[in-house]
Image (cartoon, rainbow, N blue to C red; front, top):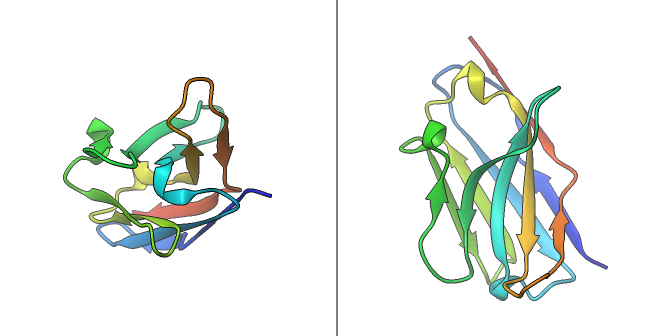
Length: 118
């Protein structure tokens, strides 16, 4: 059974930092591409950051220079370090795991709430 469990969300003041974690089980984590997404009420889920099993990371323009995605394959965990948080970063953050094969399934975590107060 595949499980992705996010943690680390919470309430923080504008300018503060949080680090999100997503612990995976039931998959060969090291070969999966991992991503962090976020969603606000009434809006579609949007990609925040992506880290492939090998290769360069990518970021949404809105978070470049403030957020850093990383992974620890030994711990089956992907992280999102979020600095200089802004109220506009308030959302539910989800991690996603996708195998690097054509038509491969994706798996999602349950999400963690991040709220940034002004």
